[in-house]
Amino acid sequence: MHEHSTRARSAARWPTGHIGWVYRGMPEFEGRVASFLAEGHTRRERQVFIADDPRASLWPKYLMARGSLIVLSTAEVYGPERIADATAQRTAFESFLVEARALGYTGLRVAADNTSLTSGPDRLGAWLRWEHEADLLMQAHPMTGLCAFDQTRSDPLTLEAVLSVHRTQHATGPQPVQGPPTAPA
Image (cartoon, rainbow, N blue to C red; front, side):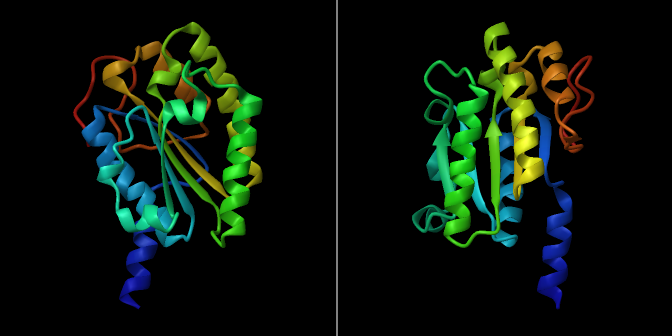
């Protein structure tokens, strides 16, 4: 009984669906993403972690060995130019989901540092188109996506734009986006 109630409390910490989150620095991102992915594990979702330098050594090797956790670089998912193609990305993430479901997972949980995918007007425009498509994808399928953006490496107007396309924003990150950075919660 105690284990079940702990799981229920854990699952309540992070919303599901398409989530936008602003963080400050990689230590905060990696630390909080660990709890996000752990919730996926308790929900029997396959987890995917994406970052420019994903540092696979930080993650439990037994989860990666059995395929429960996939660790990928941003370049592996979005290409070396880091310009998101909405159609190609939808196809890729649908494939991740189909594979996960075929292996018995209940769905897919993706945590991604997308900061580098929004630097510059071409990347930002492509990213916003992909975000719209990602939102439709997650509404129609058992997927939760955490789109994270580093406040220390992003322009406030860029952060405002990328957060505006997420129906849900994770509240434990530094807020507000506008104005001077605030201390982490």
